[in-house]
Length: 374
Image 1: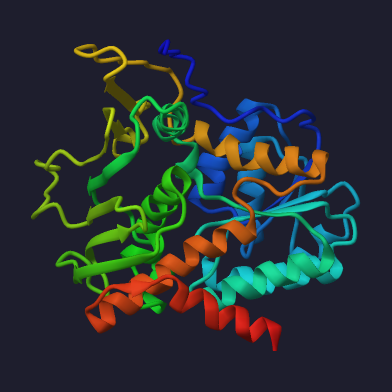
Image 2 (image 1 turned 90 degrees about the vertical axis):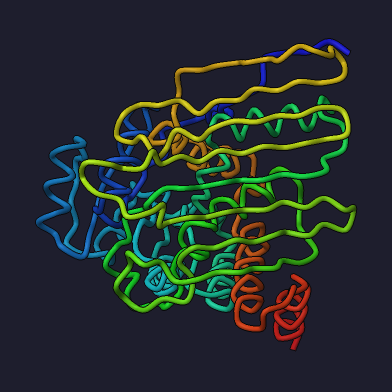
């Protein structure tokens, strides 16, 4: 076997990129990450709206967006808007999707933010709304498009590592918890671990069960169930994928940031791969890394590198996938239907935390399917 170091570390570019995008939301993730990524990719953001029109106008000036609407209803009436790009808190996405499905007669696709909803049941309603209209729905699970994760997927698919045996993601970094999270009780699993759990699913498929142990984060003052989280995804073939999501990292001060990091490792029957995620160094551009070895060429460690970074470059990926799906009349990689599997794992994680036991993912999916059939 020849080792090919063209690892497809970025998502395929869209065949056509001139779809009119309507941005909903003007917070950090839209203003500084998604819109920057879209500008770099040459995507056409035609209009923006936000809960606070004045902020929407500031963002429009910053990112050269030609039209600003005072509310969602006005934006949905614009015939130029073919893709609705939603970047609002998860408890608001269901109602925005409902309005888009009912009134967005010109829409051809929706990109929703992750997490898709606060719980599995609401996520399911969003997916069903889009399905009833025949409207492609993608979810912005952007860690799948981190360059090291894409490259890792390639080496797994090519068999360089053999059969995966153990996979880990270790995060020791302090996220910025947005003010709206105070209302949820659900914190790390829903809003940070969702990246890692979805990436495990992308790399290895759907787990059969999950076990979670967690404690509150000493730094976070508002009530929450899950601060520092340790969890294990259990697969039928014996694979175990474990995450350590430490959002505390110690008594951090301005003088000592305690070296935040995210690193991952995959051990297989025929090789080992390990890497780092550059996100904790944002806004500095720090590419993620990948290093691997394989029994095909024993004793050799391969170290491919690239200039792209997760924030903002990887955010081109979900939008590109949606555009390609619209063009081909197919499901995007991060479709709403696929994301329900991620949301089911998250829901099972909270049940595991509450009941202090391993929870089968089917315990979440099967009652939901029975409800739909009824």
